[in-house]
Length: 77
Image 1 (cartoon, rainbow, N blue to C red):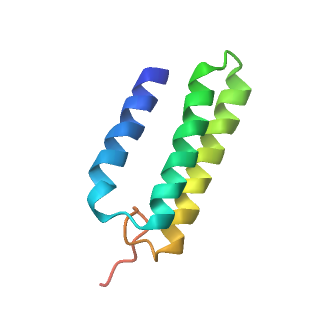
Image 2 (image 1 turned 180 degrees about the vertical axis):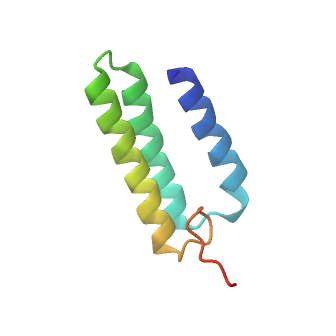
C-alpha cells in the first residue's frame, strides 16, 4: 500500500512536470517528503495525518495557480 502511494505520487509528479508552476514544484517537494515520512512510519494514525497534510499542501499550490495544474480546475459549461 505504501509503495503504491509513493509510486502514484511519483507518476503524478512526472505527469505534471511539464506544466507545473514554481509553487506547484515547491509544494510537490514538500508533499513528497511528507509522503516518504508517512510510508516510513509504523503508526497508522501518523501515516494518515502526514498523507492528509501532503494532500493539503498540493491542493493549496493548485489553488495558488488557479487550479490550472490540478483536478480543481473550474469547468466552463
